[in-house]
Image 1 (cartoon, rainbow, N blue to C red):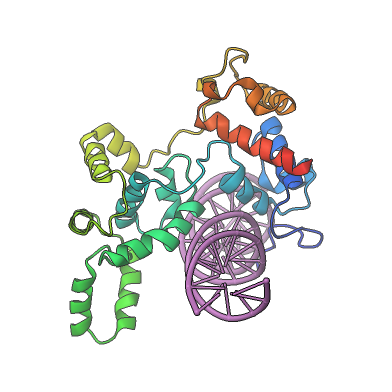
Image 2: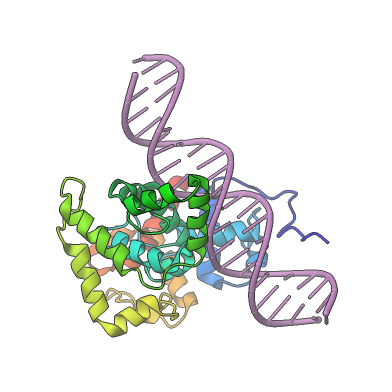
Length: 271
DNA sequence: AACATTTCCAACCGCGCGGAT
DNA sequence: GATCCGCGCGGTTGGAAATGT
């Protein structure tokens, strides 16, 4: 028996989201919270599949998302986590607050992979490519080798120190290739992370990072402390009416600013 | 300027898992 | 145990934007 489609395919819109749709979804989730995704399109007045709504929210609209390219230190963390976890992007993303699995996966495929290859590291096994080539010479074909890599990928090495070391050595030994403007910072960051047992266990353990805790937001004086999403949503919608910048930019942290950016952008696009 | 090619990333698709019935 | 259902994951794709010729 085949699986039933996740939604009624007829009348379900696909493709890029419009500002209006974004606004509907944001407003709905801010006012009602994340409930059963299957019901969201209907309740929010969207002609979208619930799955598509979830994806749009988690990958693009979520207020706690960071924008822009991954920093050098984030990249370094992704590389090390990938060496330990393989292609488990959601697990990797869970260790980088504000980043989504999709974002990390895309960044890996478009940037990090190439960087690693350029530095002589196999992005799949995290082993030096020269060694891979030596192995290839003794084995029968590259295809077999790559399929072996795939297998390794599903059973990532427990220890990635050699890979990490070789990456670090490679970065430092080829300054022209090291595009970091924060010389040595990723390595230092990683070392300090390793030294901080608590933090490391959080980063590498099974504990999920905390969701956005609205009660801990540092809000401007003219805003009350929120105890629920409803309160928060009401206030945010008020902010929309005034425009973000009327509230004074300096008093918001990244999380709040990203909410405003999203709301303001969608609002402008609508006008 | 016009066209071709490449890069990048948002969005889709299919599958597996776990909980409910 | 079988089936249904909802969710989340990882791989893949389509097309816009950037870059090259």
